[in-house]
Amino acid sequence: MAASTHTVTNQAPPLTGYDAFGSDPALVEGVDRHLDPDLSEEVRAELGGIGRATGSAQCQEWGRLANENPPRLRTHDRYGHRIDEVEFHPSWHRLLGRARSEGLTDAWGRPGGHLRRAAGFYLWSQVEAGHGCPVSMTHAAVPALRAEPELAAQWEPLLASRVYDRELRPVARKTGALLGMAMTEKQGGSDVRANTTAAVPLDAAGEYLLTGHKWFCSAPMSDGFLVLAQAPEGLTCFLVPRVLADGTRNAFAIQRLKDKLGNRSNASAEVEFEDTWARRVGEPGRGVRTVIGMVAATRLDCVTGAASAMRQALVQAVHHATYREAFGGKLVDKPLMRNVLADLALESEAATVLALRLAAAYDADTDAERAFARLAVPVAKFWVTKRCTPMVAEALECLGGNGYVEESGMPRLLRESPLNSIWEGSGNVQALDVLRVLQREPAALNAFLQEVGRARGADHRLDAAIKGVLTELADLEGIEARARRLAERMALVLQGALLVRWAPPAVADAFCASRLGGDRGASFGTLPHTLDLGAVVDRARIPLDR
Image 1 (cartoon, rainbow, N blue to C red):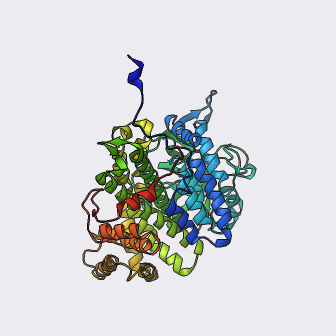
Image 2: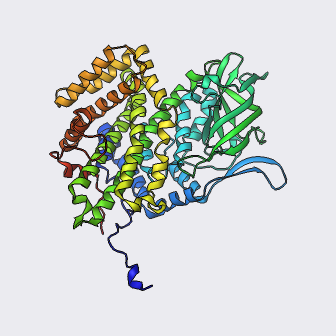
Image 3: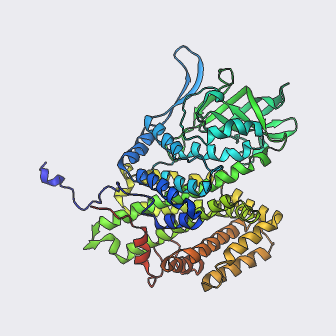
């Protein structure tokens, strides 16, 4: 074949060598908005470092290799001893090591910790999402462990450590630790009260032996796991270490690794407990109450992780359209493609602004902000994670056949996109939690209405949508069957209020017209043509020096 037929033209250059932080206006503005100005220089430098790593060819290669070389289960060593270890590609360890060194499990004890950690998690997850699972759980375990001050004193410094210590050994000899969780069982799923794993108390206070089967154990290579089991007093939370104080392995039999949709880099497993030693965490019989803080933190990470995937999908689509020529010009300049890209950009920015607002609520730690987060987190978890899959699919389509091949990275994004909607309670669980908060915690609704009320009067479509939500809330007829509808409308009103207050006029106007005013179709790319769509797309573009 003639060499001339292999000349490559009309292809976008690789999207590498950029700063994923500095080139994301919604992220930069959100961090500046919510952060103490005295921390601004320090945090900008911190996030700039993560952003440049995210955009680097080397780190993107780590993500590819970690997914093309999935973990392997080794149940026994060469001599026949049971070891139950999971082997990972070196790139997986590099990703986790960088996450630890950047403080992505250290939020609870430093100024602005939740905001800066959420922003870093949002950035670094754009490289590869699978390793974010142990990062998220390690971060989120802290509130649960604080129910037992002795355990918290031992484990919390290791969870917040900047050191990735991957060796399995007693926690007293570790320089850093990861925590996973094993909550659900095959007969229960989200209904954790249906769990049958039994916890038998030992003579020593707080010590138990567990026996049972866990259908999903996330990150089975971790140093310990938060587990729910049935103690004599009822469902109780426990901490199960992989290695006991004397250096022996705890009874932790990994039956198999799950062959799951989504990333291939992370391991999820089924595990068996048989007289497995555990320490009780929190009050006996109050297991759900003990883990609720962990649940809320992981739900916030689901919102942040979905926003991260949406941002990465968006920048890939805009980048491709910026360089690709078709029908006599650049794709990005074609009115219909510009409409699609602008619609995707609105979805991405609304998700990013909302995730940062929730992280800031955690940092404020006032009664009002805690009440706001109690309602806004399940509202956001329901809606933002559900918008991720259709948005990523549309972004993939912007690349056409180029986006359909694995080398583009878009199929990996698409496979991962449903994860955050399922993890830590799927859509119905979130919608029902919204109803539960509305019925039991009036302060949460008041805080939510105060938040959206700060934008009242700035846009007539937002005002009408707020009124519509109030009408929905006043009508309790068939409320459970309407729970999804209510959660969706509350999420859109909250996003609209935040964008009206903080986003450029072109973004806020387009969001309110399409999401609140109903001036769009059922698919992406159906925005009113009279909007300033070019400005919306330009805000999402990654500038490259080529």
